[in-house]
Image (cartoon, rainbow, N blue to C red):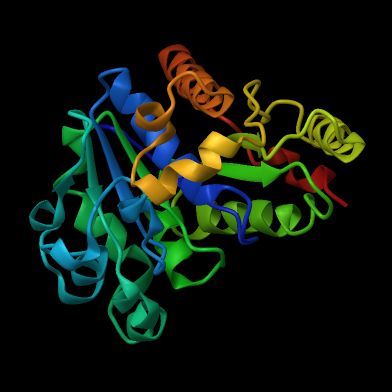
Length: 268
């Protein structure tokens, strides 16, 4: 069965969707069959891969709320090994609708079950919150990848997320672990970027990815063209960074290594 990794951080603007799109594309470029699920009502993961919202034949809302088979919701991309289950604004109301449904925290897990074995990786782009949509992602996932921007307040909320991961592991999903923390929006000219990177590595020495995603104009431009950075500017530093993240992830999997939530207690 393929690995299911949700990309989560309750803070907005930290690079979750950018990471979801470009890590998925990088894995697909390595000929790893990859599925990207957009669980954010903004739907940017789909549009960032070139999907036209007016031409979609289904979205993740239908699987979560209406029990539509997820196999009917798959959309192809320009990359042979990458498919997407997109989101639309319909997902905005799903948090409220899920409350009254049976097994509300496990709807995504059950929807994914028939499909997961067909992929090497399933990536889930989470919304910027710790609500029922994110809880569904955490319950379905094997691991959590946390993008963390190298800016002020970077550590704010990280302890809460780690605590949430631990609670979900104990209550709903005993296999869940933290895959790692990915430093994003890194500006080597800014002292604060160096300070944040050093602090995170000190608190979570075993969880921080060696690859670091820089601030990069081409990386910021690529979603407006509906392309991952791999297809927009393969020579850019942003593309190089996400290819490194993908290689690091695959090496970890080859070694069978896993992250841990034990570092949670070290966060003030």
